[in-house]
Image (cartoon, rainbow, N blue to C red; front, side, top):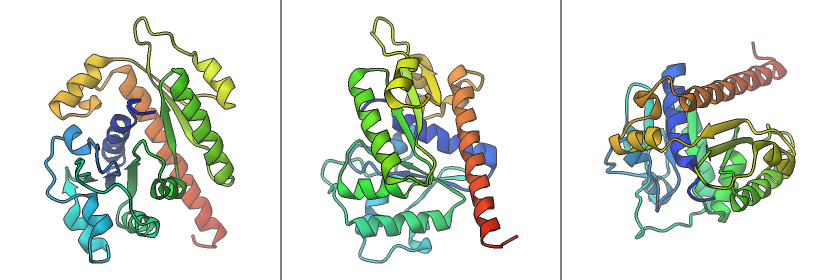
Length: 249
């Protein structure tokens, strides 16, 4: 559901992974009309993901590098134009080619997926090695969470099930659905519960910083960092297993 904070968590996760792993990480903002990656990192892009999806030239590593914002030694950003004047539908095969080019160009890629369900977004989501679904503890958000979770598990029977994050938990005076009830609705435990803290997230957003830069010891920072470590460890183990099956040492 829009407004759950999925983009904010994706941006912070990409930065955390780059700092912890000290490897190249690419953050890809796929919300062409309302993306916030450039805002969260306080950057003004001259070229965007739109150039990758609509350019006359085929996207290769050389062209991709020209479109990126180099944030620091490890993190680069393929930003969104964030304009209502741009198209929002793209050729599915072209999007898949872009994803494959990005994967071949970096150690880790974090894709911030917009809150739409058009064919090119559906195909994109199904290409992901790891999927993190972010919801708030409200009925409409949890309805969407269950719909997404059930569909993705059915469409990806041999992949790791989507991880579930409950965000903005504990808003004062807001009736909320408990995590145990969410687990019963979805059919699996919630992976991460992030408490509502408008001060931490608001200060980071307004200053163009990541939450770890604002308060490295905050509960939300520690928990999100733990989830990132779990995901990167899982990805490493899967790649090692694949190499073993293929006979590669």
